[in-house]
Image (cartoon, rainbow, N blue to C red; front, side):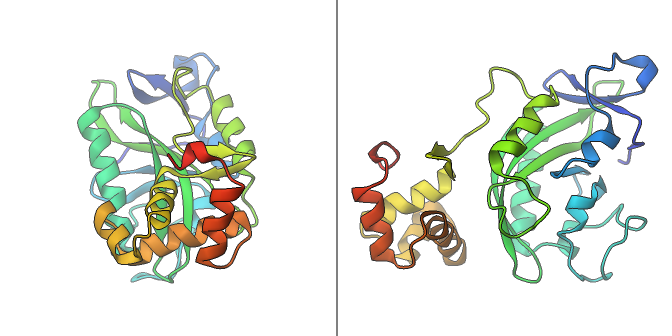
Length: 252
């Protein structure tokens, strides 16, 4: 189902998700779609058939030539995930969206995205079910902050992105918005830490993938992320730094 994403519409918390309302029907306490789309974050509306309803320019910067070519602002609507992302990512995004449909509540996901051109990036994604006037869920609204800002020059640091997201007023105050570990201004996702724990336990890449139900490529991606964050190049350097200098509490 499609719905209106006019820039003047207000994105307002409703039930455990959001509802889009006209300015004269809602107090101006919450952001408009236009103001959200102007943020240096990935902001998007999607359908449950794994296609985009609309997205901001920051999302479109991640697009690659697919079956229909590079997407302009005009023809982006209706773009299927499979025209942009690899199968592994399409399946993960679809699972996240279907979970929202089932639970009927906002959730936070640590996502690893693989594009068709093999470029990959990590993000912390806040996804909300979108309710219509009859309290029916008609789609998903999402805001994603990059946890690795080295890929896109337009991206802000994770702390700055989190501040922007909190200031929208859309996140419940009781919500723990950092599901991973933020130590000395370095953010490690839960999946990264799981991979690291198994690596330190002398598990191979293949066995780590089997235990975590991940492909070997994804495990390598997690471990390479950690190496880059800690400025090390080898497995032995990584283990030494974590055991001797980094925080034992995240390895337990």
